[in-house]
Amino acid sequence: MIKNTILFMWSIVILMTLSNLVVFKKSASMMVEWKLLSTKSSDMNMFFLLDEKSLTFMLIVLMVTTSILMYSQFYMNKKKMMFSKMLVTFMLFMLMLVLSPNMVSLVMGWEGLGMTSFILIMYYQNKKSMMSSMYTMMMNRVGDITLFMSMMILMNSNSWMFMSTQYLNHSLMWISLILTSMFSKSAQIPFSSWLTEAMAAPTPVSALVHSSTLVTAGVYLMIRFKSSIMSLNMEQVVMTVSMMTLTMASMNSLSEMDMKKLVALSTLSQISIMFISISVNLYSLAFFHMIMHATFKALIFLCSSTFISVTNTQDLRKISSTSLSLITTKISFNTASMTLCALPFLASFYSKEVIMEMIMIKDLSKLLGLLFTMMMMVTTIYSLKMMMIINLNKMASVMKVTSETGKQKLSKLFLLVPSVVLGNKMLWSMDLNWNINYLSIEEKMTPTILIVTMIIMIEADKKLKIIKPNNEFNQMISYMWFMKNLNIMSKMKFLNQAINLNMTAEKGILVNQAKTIGMFMHKSTSFMLKVTQINLKTMMLIMISLMIALI
Image (cartoon, rainbow, N blue to C red; front, side, top):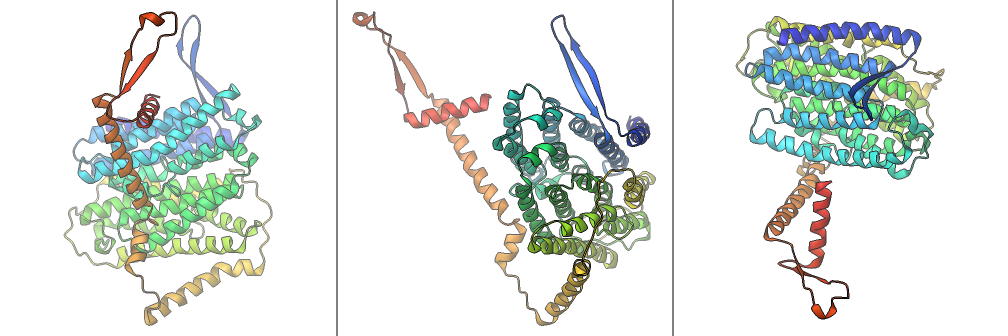
């Protein structure tokens, strides 16, 4: 069954590649109508939008999912079929979100992503995975609620289509709700804390979630709502939130030693780069970088999964790749890490380097440009940290697996090739709307000066020990700027209130007592409300909360 599924997905990938060539050549778009139900009075139809962005992203999702399914046959010895079905379901909901041209089908895909991610994170059925899945679900529900509210506001336009939103008089409330839902799904501040908690899922699930599905859904929708964001000048809000997230993720990654969390923080920084490019109206470059990021980030997660399985630990200081049997994983991991650093002529170089140039050219403050360049340098530092520790460490723990299977190697090679050549091949086929870039000599020398300065500061700190991080600083970094503490406090307060409300509801809130007085029969009948156990204010709050829960 799994082999047939993989062959079927391979054939779909080939067909999608051919269709992409046709769409790129003709620059066309197509609306496909699928009649779900037909009655005498009405029809129920479902629409799919096939254009340059949807077909390209659909091809990447199928390619990444195929390689992960191939790898999962090695990773999951038990319940292999159930795990594969959950991954395919997760992929189908993402494809529904990508191909949907209206809010109704988008919400279906959006909710499907949230529910299947909740199931996949709690796959191991232990205490940590259960708590992490519940925490992730509660954080994402904020974005789900705001998306539903924006959908209700859009009912006044008599159309659910994305294309019709550019002709509407957008309200600030509507676009704020849309941005909140995108920030929560893409784990931007203040919703960033759920991303590292989701690492309790199996590593193939993390590879699919962090590369091309869950966290990239917010970026994809922001590209779709381009006209709405530009019409209300929300670029400064997006820039502020994404720059704060980029700084936080880069700071945390320098001190993080959990391999899965370190790769998750690198995902958060790359998503922030996409949002920053969107905030300066570089929507095509953001989409281009999202495509490049999906390939090498899935490859990094698959290689990390092999290292964790072999050494039976997630501590980066105890992981090694000195064994000759892991040569494919070692080459793939080093290549993907260098792609993350945007090494020249690899895939992400063609997107990240252009984004850096355009950020320097834009009329932004010098502080923002300097901070963005420093965070790009931090990306190189923690990528080199991963490569040096894994390649130079000696095997400290006993190896569980002595060699890789053929399907395990093939799944990584399937992602290794696009991680190297995809940027060069897609650069000429995508319309990026470039202008002639002019950089002064100071701007050209800024990255080199920063790198040399950072090397000098690191060497000076080793000798003089200028920077002495204390416990408060380490705690702030480990708790992601105390966002985890705030979310835990709010969660406990919410749970306590919910328990108290349930207790009072079980005792009985209102006793409706109607007394008919014969002498005043001609007057209106009066109803006396007898409140038991609680006062009137608490009664009204409980009624409002019950109505919201029913809605």
